[in-house]
Length: 163
Image (cartoon, rainbow, N blue to C red; front, side, top):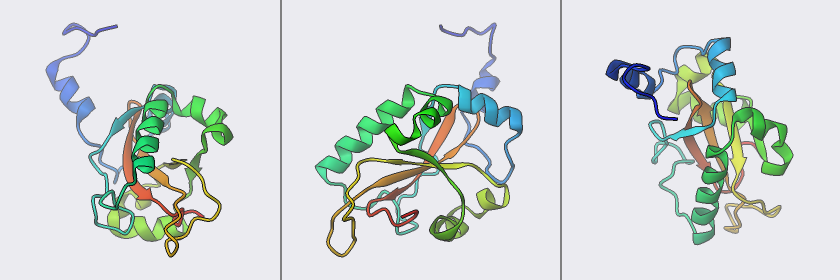
């Protein structure tokens, strides 16, 4: 279904598509709507090298292929649907504590103060993951926004943020 000018004004599109302000806590209604709306991926807050978990790290062919396959998968589903099959998709909410807290306190402290919702998704799993050996078990972290938007944050190739 395509919306028309009768449905939305140009200023509505600008408001809807503007990056979130994660210093403000999402309302319960915003969270509920966002979790029931098919996911739209946004990259406004993607870490491009500010932390050890930025997307400036080397991606192997398998990492790249898995990343895009998983992004394709989640973009056709809702958070509710993915959460109902969390084990199958290795799709979990991540409490902002431990290593995730440490990474976010410098990168996006306003999100911590506003108790934002963060999820992670595996790209693939290897039980022997280790930065020292180069064996990967990558995870991607993202933060929930409004209107079904999820903002990709971190790339954790060795499953260190939430081991």
